Amino acid sequence: MPELITPFDITCVIFAGGKSSRMGRDKSLLPFGEYPTLAQYQYERLKKQFRHVYISTKEIGKFDFSTDIIPDITGEGIYAPTAGFVAILEYLKDERLFVLSVDAPFVDTDIIKRLLEADHADLDAVIARTPTGSHPMCGIYHKSLLPSFHKMLKEDNHRLGMLLKNSQTSFVEFTDETKFSNLNHPHEYEAALKALL
Image 1 (tube, helix red, strand yellow):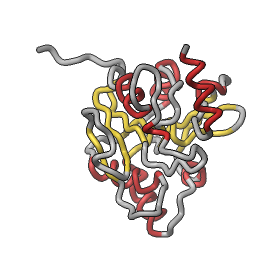
Image 2: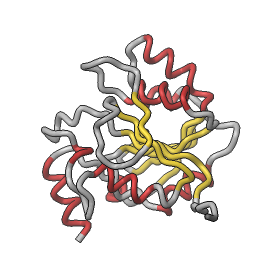
Image 3: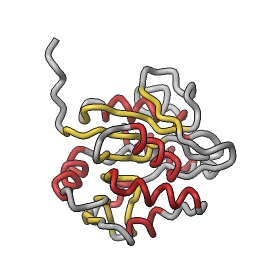
Image 4: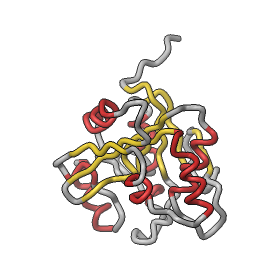
């Protein structure tokens, strides 16, 4: 069987370990598109684009579809991507990773391509930015940031924006805010479902 050729020769990690407090229920388990969960929707579409896709979450048995899970390293009550970054950067041998939040289903191939084109070995990160601000959970992170993530975790500091500001980060500008919509509240979820039709 020939090896599957994907557009992007980089590993992708979907972050799905948030608390979803504003949604009122776990957003990664909400039905989306033709799939029973948003997490599976993201996984199925992204696995066609990346050489490998992992999901970062707190619970290994959370999803009922076949996927590779990387559990974060925090205990109960701590919901921050910092722990997920430490876990994935330690577990994977890749020098760089593309990361995307599970609740950003409209980030498309063109966005990913532009971020990858902006990346080079001297950088620590490449992050999408729109007129409303940067999107730390949509971009490329290099293993060079692992010591900084360890320090953040030790200090209980989870401000990704500050980390990126103090690192070698390239911000790629985009104008279409709708592509970066996050499904944080029920009305945003309902709007996203309508946008799929």
